[in-house]
Image (cartoon, rainbow, N blue to C red; front, side, top):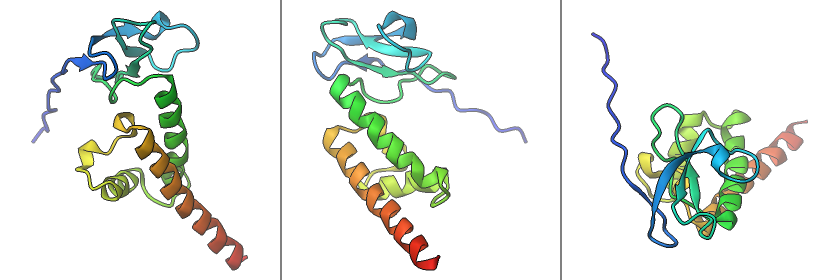
Length: 142
């Protein structure tokens, strides 16, 4: 039996800073280097510097629009978090399950693209502990 793909309904994306709608734009719309092919950008851009990447396959937003400070913190959190599965400590799916457990979230809600600065800082802290413990254990074995 062939598995049918669930159709994803695209919800309106609203800027959490000014309450205006964010609209789908090509990354070339922004100044600087592209972060994704398509972005949801606040209609008040550039005065309101809020945007979020869109999934390439279905154009659904990858989280909640963020200003420069929060985008930077989310990027840092992702860089650290991705080490959990890229180094083989967890599989990718088990890393996201761990993230959901840490924040008492449903799996589908465990996305750094929806986190605020405090949650991103906690991700960095919690993952750093795991990575440091792993390094310490590896030093003892050698």
